[in-house]
Length: 115
Length: 117
Image (cartoon, rainbow over all chains, first blue to last red; front, side, top):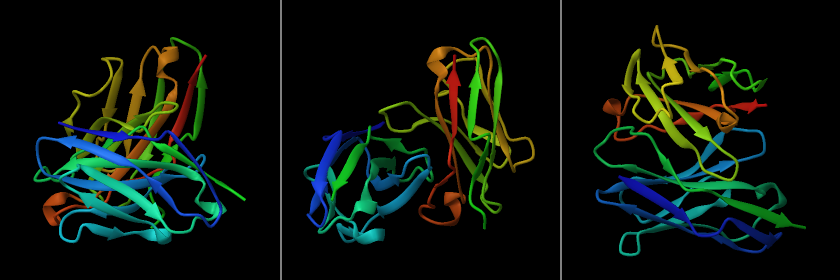
């Protein structure tokens, strides 16, 4: 079984500043890792995913994440945030070799970008 | 491609009533998932289908919850004898079968927000 811990429930940041949202996971098997974004009253949208290969993954809207197997982390970063990045961000994990198994999500981090 | 749709978007009901939610997946997707999201939490998996077969239902929260996908297209999630603790956002997602690729993205619908009074 897998679990995900998002270390910060809320992250306020000023516009154009960099941001890092932290995610740690636990699993007895190899995993796929994901970051989703949820805007108010909307469903989840995939920002980026790590399946294999390069540990630095680039996604949409200028976000990137780095997979660190030894630290079991998958932190999300953006060098310069915009007001429109204000949303809830979820880290998720799925076991490899299990096909499209259901995702296990963290509790989410609310990013608030301040003008 | 209109994406995953869910109906209704909002449902208010009284405790003890039955409710049913519908999910229409992306047309060529044969996998369909249901998740529940309570306030301040991430989505929690409930059940999923491959075509009309329900592959996992042990995570349904109680025997008051049931789901169907009779023709392998749309799906319904029913909650009988609703309780206040059932108040949550119910999310549906769909994907292609992972047999066709290493991993296929799950696309989420906008959700149905249930309020039980």
